[in-house]
Length: 212
Image (cartoon, rainbow, N blue to C red; front, side, top):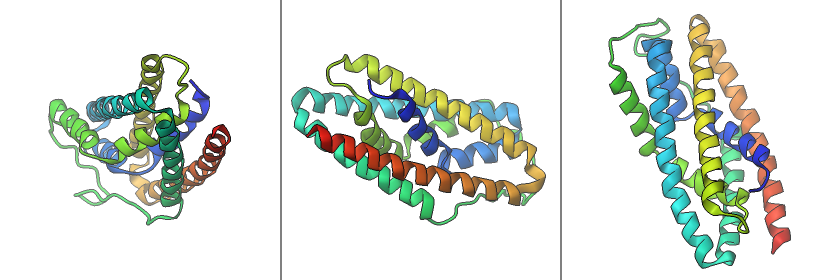
């Protein structure tokens, strides 16, 4: 497996980018409290694992049939990472709105329902499939056992989902009285992450081209 540190950097920037999962974790933290938010985050992480398994199966079939096709997927993947970074850095600003405005409203929702919401949020979002299809091939060594590499990459991603979403939930719970500042910080994180992904995509593209 190639450069796990770089993979973690790409995955972290992508996970930290505001999307359905991040918005769900933030909203749960503000409306249900810290403890119950954990169930939604666990659902998000498990859903991501399911998406990773589907994506990895497809990649494994490509590796087994054609190494040239695998290189082509790597090139397309580098282009997608560049597009994702551009969209994060220069796309429209995202925000979230609570039903009760800027006040906290702790609602009586079961842990099971929050877990299910998190799970379905991940499974119903097509973007993670594109992400895994684009990123996994960049870090797979075809000379090594594919299954062990997949397990490491998928496990790392799921752990990062847990860590980053818990950080978001805690940060927004603490900053609930200053939501406008919190959203400004969220926007800044997104722009930095996007620029980082664009730079990484260039490096990945060059490395793939040099192997042709």
